[in-house]
Amino acid sequence: MIVNYPIYETRTIKDYLESFYLGKSKIYNLFFNNQILLNNHKCKENDSIKNGDIISIIYDEEIDYEKSKKDIDILYEDDYFLIINKPKNIIIHDSKSNTDSLSNRVANYYYNNGISLNIRFAHRLDFETTGLIIYCKDMLTHSYMNHFIETHDIKREYRLLVSGKMNKKKGFIDLPIGKNRHENGKMIVSKTGKEARTYYEVLKEYKSYSYVKCLLETGRTHQIRVHFSYLGHPLLGDLLYGGDANLIDRVSLHSYMTSFIHPVYKNSLEVKCELPLDMKGLV
Image 1 (tube, rainbow, N blue to C red):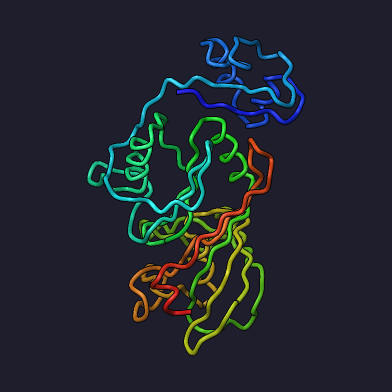
Image 2 (cartoon, rainbow, N blue to C red):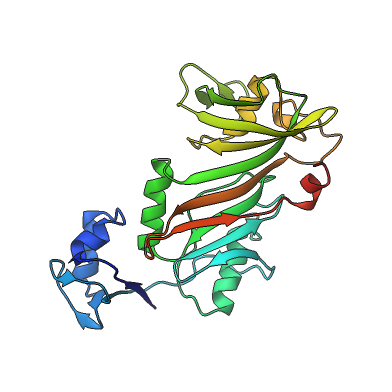
């Protein structure tokens, strides 16, 4: 399969590939294996490119997940990204005992649309969490997204329902998070943990709970759940961190919006995913 990248600037091919934060060894191998074309011709890494040129990468790949014949809810798609709405109670990638992960469903979509590429998810959501998930169709886009997720330069907004009413209606939580050594799979606020920072704003208050939006500056495991539980306001439905499951039967956390600079088109891309029915019924 061939993936094309239209050029909107003047630089060398090597500089262009490095702008996606692709490693030197990968760039070397692409040229060594004659997988890079400039306007359908062989080229060298120091060849100049200009507005209107097209760089093509020849991929020798195939779909690397089994197909699950269940539909996906597509929020945005182009030649480089597939952004979809993850339903509740599904994992992102498969395991030996489960071949109906979100990635298995994406594999079926790729197969039906003639996309012969590996399945590349840019990030994860917990089993119960709903909302947008970004899949990258090619190695350049995946490398770009990995870099900006690691450096926290992608805006990610979540919507959630927390127990009670918060004294501060807007704030910044800066509490490090580490593994709970006494309970497998659980995280805790810990002085020896990794830095974790969450911005929040209460959008609406109800009798026994509040509707909140969060922006993540870091992306630690269970970050939002741990931070609000520590403050005494666990998420509704979050039994692991002390939440009440009377109003909702899963963690009331939804990945609502993301925005970032598109690596190829260079425009600002913003995608939103409306609340699922179980959370919408409570707000």
